[in-house]
Structures are given as C-alpha cells and as structure tokens.
Image (cartoon, rainbow, N blue to C red):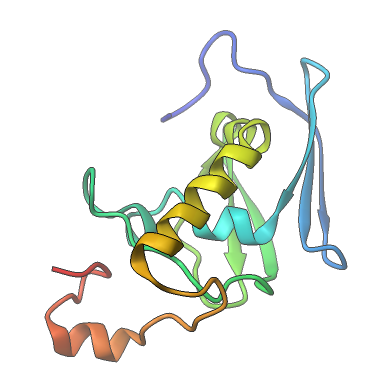
Length: 143
C-alpha cells in the first residue's frame, strides 16, 4: 500500500481523541471509523511489528493504555503516529487506516487467537529490547 489507488477513499476528517484513546477518521465514501490506539499499535505496518516477511510478525502486548503523542502527515497519502511507548516507525496510509477501521472485529479476533496460541496475556509487558539483543533477536523478532 505505497500510496493512493484511483478508487481509494480519502479522509475528510481526522481527530485524535486522547480521552478515549481512539483515532476518528471520516472518509470520502461516507464511512467513519473510531480506531483504538491499541489496535493501531499492535497492527502497526512497521517492520518492527510486521517483521521482514510473512511469519515474522512480532506479537505486541501491554499496549492497552498506549497513547499517541503526535500524528505527523506523510505526503498526501498517510500519517505517522508517535506512540508514548516510543514506537514511531509505522506509516499508516489512508488505505491501511480504512482497512483497520473496516476490519476491526476480525483483527481483534486474530489478535486474541495469537495471544492464546502464544500463551501470553494481552497486558503482559513486552520483552525489553536489551533481552532481545542478548538473545540474538536484535531486529525485534524471535529467531
């Protein structure tokens, strides 16, 4: 999703709701979504979260209370949020935000299944970067 396709709906409104920890986004096709910051953080399109290829995704935990400290525009096609846990490398295209908004139920179910399969709690703290570096997984995923 490097940019806009001809038929990609574009945002008409974008509001960061710090109190409810949600991004509200309205699109040119009339759709409107409230996307929890946690969902954005655990499905960040960054290599840190998605890995470097299929099957290398890094399960994110302990993100329920994550906040967005800033939201910077990236050209005319995306935004780059900065989360209060230090994560700031994900570029969220309009199409990707639309997908997050329209597929929230399925994405939450997928996340819950991954938590169960990994035998980890949603609010468990992430392993520290130092622990990953010492284990040989310096690029952010387990080897």
